[in-house]
Length: 420
Image (cartoon, rainbow, N blue to C red; front, side, top):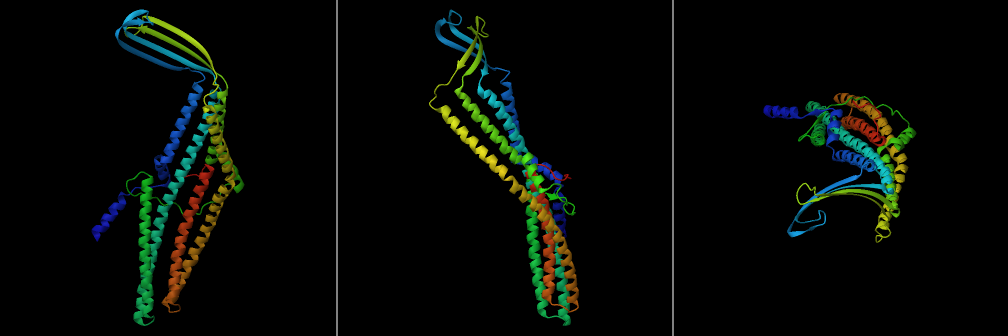
C-alpha cells in the first residue's frame, strides 16, 4: 500500500503543471489551424510582392542547349557546316499594359487582409479551445475535491448513525440509508477522478505533451463587469472582428478577380528583349544576335473559355458578397448571444455562491438536529446532497463564466481584460 502511494506521488510529480498563459503560448504554436493561418499570411505576402514587382521588373529566362548531329549540317546561327550546335538565349519580357496587373494589386491586398484577419481568428479560436480544456482540468480538480468531501461527510454520518442504532436512538434503516449514500458518493468520486484524468490528458495533447498536463489554479474572485455595452460590442465586432474582416476581404478579392478576367476583352501590350549566341562549343561566342519586340495582343475567340472563367468568377463574387452580408447580419445575434451568456453566467455564479452558503448552513442544522434526534435521516441526506450539488454548481458556474468571456473575446478579436 505504501509502495503504491509512493509510486502515485512520483507519477503526479512528473506531470508538468502550467499556468494559463503558458498553456496558451504552447497550444497556439501547435494548433494545426493556426499554423495553416500563419502559412496563409506568408503566401499572401508573397502574392502581394509578386504583384508589385511585376510593375518594375521584367520576367527573365535563360537557356543553354547543346546538340550533337550524326553528320555536319549548315548551322544557320553560325553560317558554317557543323556537327555540334551550342545555343544560348536570354529573354526579358515585360507586360506594358494589362488590366489584370492592376486588378492583381487590389486582389493581393485583399488576400493579405483576409490572411491577417484569418490568423487572428485562428489564434483566438485556438485560445478558446485551450481555455476550455484548461478550465475542464481546473473544474475537474475542484469537482474531485467536492466528491471526496461528500464521501467524507457520508462516512462521518454513517459512523454517527451506527452509534445511534447501537444505542437504540435510531432504527437500522438509518445506517443502511447512509451506507447507500456512502456507496453513491464513492461511485461519484470515481467518475469525477476519471473525468479529471481525461481532461489532463487532453490538456497535455494541446500543449505538446505525450502524457497528461496539470493546470495551476486561478483565483476565485468573481468575474468583473464587461467594460463595454452591448451596442459597443456589436460595433467593435463589425469594425475589427476577425471573422467579419475575413468576409469583407474575401468579397474584395473575388470582385478584383472578376474584374481582372473581364480585362481579357482588352488588348495587352508586351515588350520582349532577347539575346542569342551560337557556336559549336561552350560558351557560344561565334555569333551573337540581340532583338527587341513590341507586341500587341487581343483575344478574339478562345472557344468560350474566357466567358466560362468570367461566369465562374462572377458566381464566386456573388457567393462571397452573400457570405459577407450574411456574416454582417449575424453580428448582432452572435455578439448578443456571447454577451448575454457572460452576464447570465456572472449572475449564475453569484447565485451559486449564495446557494453554497445556504446549503452549508442547512446541512449544519440538519446534522445537529439528527444527532439530537429531532429530524429524520432522509432530511439529513437531502441536506447533504444539496450541499454537494451546490458546491459542484458553483464550480461549473465559475468556469462557465470564464469560458463565456473567452467566447466573446474570440468574436471581438481582442482581450477585454489583461491576460495574466
